[in-house]
Length: 381
Image (tube, rainbow, N blue to C red; front, side, top):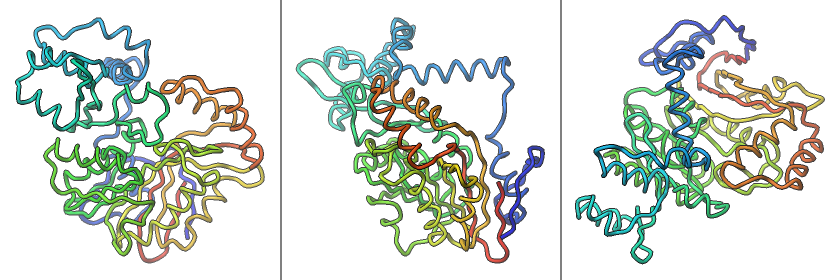
């Protein structure tokens, strides 16, 4: 396998991946990172300010301080939209009398029958959140379910890793696609626009329920769901594209299906990378966002080389960030705090000691792309 570390100035140009697929490392890197949806907006620009404002609004249901600022605002002249925002964005209750007086009776009845809302006395409690993503409207768990306490089988909406992977997918017309660990179905539904067929799999039955609901909500028919762990639901099948946003957080204990896994350190994503080539067609791609570690006695590039030895694939690894163990623990604790409140000191110390016991020097995160191809393969960092 030819190995090379990519220089900062080498990722240039834009090469289409439809039709004949480029074979060079530079061409593949260009096609995955500089597609039409990838751009860098300068800080301070009007577009960047607008993007930052939009991101803040999208995070507002999960942040109580932002909720307090936004809740007093109303949508002038559109009471229906204002009601839907209250119900399916901020997770507020409303009386059935109010809902039936504002929405057409059939729609109010449909919201009850499909369990988007449930009655508790005269109050109607929203059971999901609706999140816009491109041309899609996606249902996921309501913020109310999160605020009720930790939920192992919680199904979140479109987070930052999902957005990154969705905008990096190498999709081709008429392809057969697998979304491994689909959550609410975002990547699968994005792929449905050009794919012939898409399979969405997950270990969480509630995730598949949301995925099927979202397919119907968006009028998508070329999607099927499978329940099972890793590649078990698709044995003996091959795909043109496998997209994977796995639960890759590096934690001493697996508590939440959507972020944690029971394997030690990064061995879960290592296993996925080793298994993936068997399920790829010739010329097919496996794309995975994940985290991996560098041990004190072994650089991360040397570790990852072993993952792909004899894979029969070209490998492109785009490193997005790196953190020391303590900084990583504090970062993940801060993210969890926005959902569940501050972590205990005991849990933080347990996490730090977990890394120390495994001699972890740094934690890295990024996008791994594999392409199955006969001949001499290359590995590009």
